[in-house]
Amino acid sequence: MSDKQRLGALARGKVRTAEIKAKVLKALESIEREIENNEGIYPHNGGSLSKNEVARRAGVGKVTFFTPTQTELNAYVDNWLASLKNKEVIGRARVNASHAERAAAWKQKYEDLAQNHHVSELELQRALAEKDEVLALLRALKVENKKLTLEINRLKGGNVVILK
Image 1 (cartoon, rainbow, N blue to C red):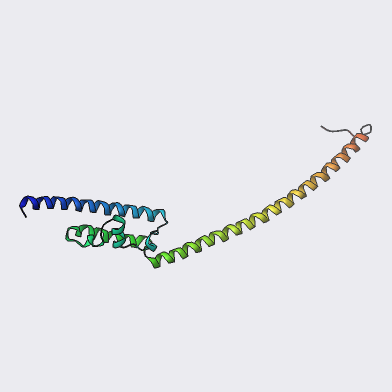
Image 2 (tube, one colour):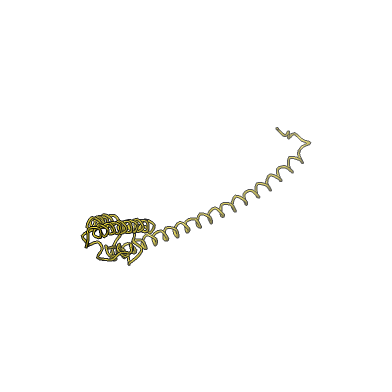
């Protein structure tokens, strides 16, 4: 192989290396967005996220990270996975546990809502009963007012004076 061919091959290799790095970084960003949008759980592959899953998402071969030209990218992905596993729910067992925790949290929210609904219904019944009592009192007071008004009108000619 001539020097010209070797230099051309090295240049093409550098372009491929840059393309692979760009694909992998784009896949990592996409994975982070998906985890963020799914309440901290990786939504694919049963929640399991590994270097092989990153390679699959990036559209590169599994062995790509282990080639001599990709050692820096390999270390970057390892560090990214390690930091992600410390702060997010990654892995099938942790995802299943997280699903159970989320189901329990939703069940608790449902039970709290049911309790609040029950309390609201009781308060409504009490308010309606109070309203009925007040309306009955109002009717009685109107009747008494009418009687007293009639009595005053009957006695107007006498010693009773209306004060205003």
